[in-house]
Length: 318
Image 1 (cartoon, rainbow, N blue to C red):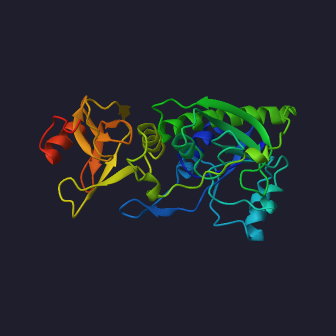
Image 2 (image 1 turned 30 degrees about the horizontal axis):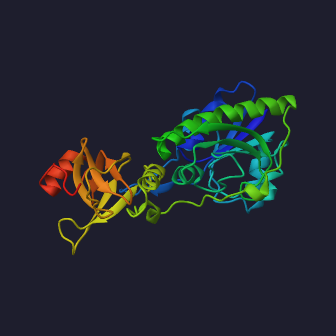
Image 3 (image 1 turned 90 degrees about the horizontal axis):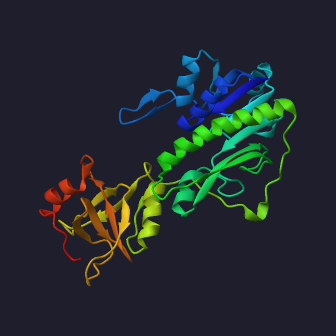
């Protein structure tokens, strides 16, 4: 089986690694997005998929799109039996989907039809879902609307973040794609149309999605902070030192905790150190974060923040 792989970030590279271990096929070409400047220095960097492909001496292709006949002919010249797509970042027109003998298979990090779109892992956590998973589907011209070939579920732990689930789902996706290709060779796949009325959409995150509204219950805030970690990161504006010039505090995942005593601090009030974590008041409970990052400063633990910014460690207002 001749396989063409299309993907770009770390998630896709993990799936490509699984395909390279697959004994039932050969990766004959790798497509990834064009090299672009990244980081503070704006140096041009290879994508994780390109780094892996170059290291394994695989042919790499980086078209801007698939609008030209030359690009389509280049793909056709690889004579793929199947294209495997994972977080590629380019929309594939029907003219591409029609080239491989078995079409294009996509690895999507959700239990479709729920959470179609660019941020299924993050949105599932933010929504407080307890189960997610991986879907391998037969691509069509729609946005994640193709028939389902295989699915596998994965529980979301109360302390899981987008980072931890990303890694687990990438490994699962690689295994599930290999299983799908094996069944495809044997003719043992039965495509199942998606249940359209149950479809939901998971749009790409923006920096604004990370803003914490402390007027929400602690569990809702916990879900948000886990879902946006590590990017875009959860934050709020704090005017505890200078109300006229509040600073941006980035909050890392922690745990909800109970109020103590009769007083109920205003939502968003920093009340000090509790169990070596910084306690911030939510609508119904406290949120206890072990680490945070003041704007323009390095990440620090809660005790260092209390000493440096509150000049105290003992909680107040509880």
